[in-house]
Amino acid sequence: MSHEFQLTHDIELEATPEQVWDAIATGPGIDSWFMGRNEVEPGVGGAGRMEMPGFTATSTVTAWEPGRRFAYKGTPAEDGTFMAFEYLIEAREGSATALRLVHSGILGDDWEEQYDALKKGNPLYLRTLALYLRHFPGRTAVPVAAFGPPQPDQDTAWTAVTAALGLSKDPQEGDPVTFTIDGRTVTGVVDTAVDQGFLGIRTDDALLRFVGGGGMLMTGHHVFADVDQATAESTWTTWLAGAMA
Image (cartoon, rainbow, N blue to C red):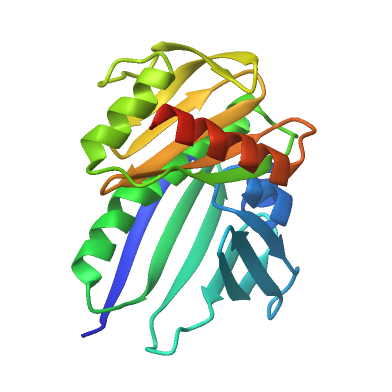
């Protein structure tokens, strides 16, 4: 049985309303903190598109008020399920901005599990948005999505990846990170760590995100450098396979 839902999240950002607008309402901006490769056609009725390996989602812009309000609705699936997003922007004193996200729609038969995932996941994406605007203002990223091989359980997957990153099984925000990928040594700091489902690492030129559950882990990285997306995704796929071997 389907189920209607609505979630509301508020966050204060160290950025101007114009910077926030560019981050939430343009393809390159969304690439820098959300999921996949994105395109947004400006204006009400404009087409939206988000692509990840093996998955494409389309949407339609339903509100377009630059610097104030942006909303879009995903194309409904055959069973009528869909998701809609509304962003409300309000300037604060100085260069700060208050952002409200209203995430609504209709979920499918396993709606309770989906709802729980959205309730936990939305604040993590907004945290990545805040880190993007704080540490990489005026820049845009190349999104890098790669998938590791399935593991017997989440503990196995998490333990393997954190070890390959030079971290303990229970990393904490602020922990230093040093690891090697494709012959390069990468250093950074843990910026987010949630149970065994989400790990964020900030480097000089990237926001690295490891996301997963049920024995699966994938990357949702944002690389603020001149890299080829396909090559980077292949490199990270190889790295994940090696970490979990």
